[in-house]
Image (tube, rainbow, N blue to C red; front, side, top):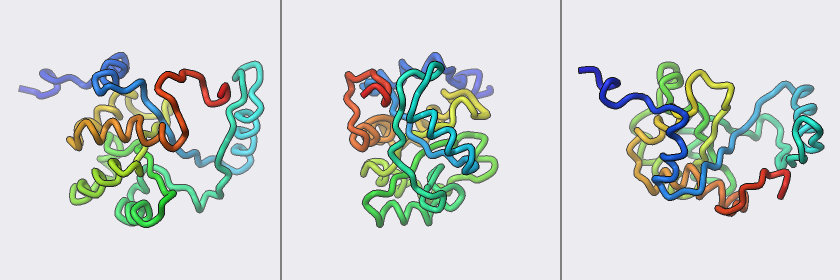
Length: 181
């Protein structure tokens, strides 16, 4: 029998029940943008200044050159970027696109790095990330991909909320957008 007929792929409507089941107040999604310089300047301007389509401004707290940004756990050079995160206190890695079927077909995560991924996640070095809505799968699939790693609920709580909340000073009862804080 086909496993998908028994355990179907979750749908986006399932995501709130999933994070509530972990005892989380929500998901903290942190990711890195790589845009052409001219476009990036415009995006940052709109984020910082807000406007009629966006509402309050949303400050950009990083202005690092491309060479200093790490996205997608460093995919496909996972091992090298894990080493950086283990060595340098302020290096964090995001899960954007990683572990999804789409990424695994092209740049599979090496299973031998699973213990290091677990340790990094529990140490606050791995943060939930997504390029939603510009992704080739439902948002729920990325959450499902993290869950199926089998790294435990403590790891999921750390990656999906606790580590980003600590880094960014988020409060579980604060539902304001960053621009409103």
